[in-house]
Length: 193
Image 1: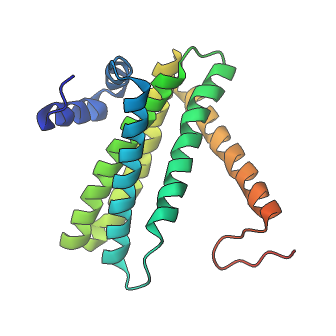
Image 2 (image 1 turned 60 degrees about the horizontal axis):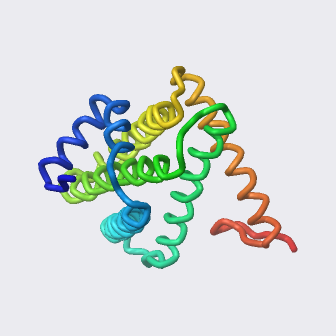
Image 3 (image 1 turned 180 degrees about the vertical axis):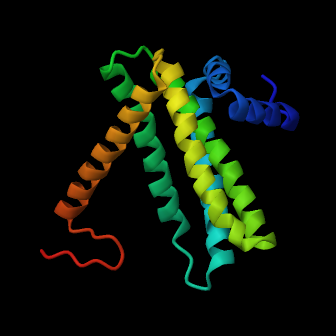
């Protein structure tokens, strides 16, 4: 397996031009589960690092706790892995957990690259950073839709996208109810107990 910068850049280029082909290539990587979990940890650390750097460049407010940010990021990615695998299987898909894991890891690696571009934009043309963020979110949804379709052998990208949106809504509702039951409110909100 070639992890040189040129091969990673080539895979990134293929991800942007032909996400289905890149998904098949990523799923075929002969990585043991331990390496897949380590890769997940690596993208969480990089994501938190660039997130912290962005906050530092944008505001003079206090930095969020990096450990807390890492836990939240890691949990979000784990939920995404389980949802991509589990919901797809419920819908008749055939994807395996280890494939869902590596696809989500690569998807997050692409998002880390977008974060890096945003950090550079904050230094050079700060107004461009917000646009990069919006385009990054659109790219995330496009890649996730293609990756889930390939993972499970689904043909209709529209149906996959609709199920992703419904799943995201469902997860958000469940998390909101859990947080409410635990008495945890988003910053700036007061929860009556």
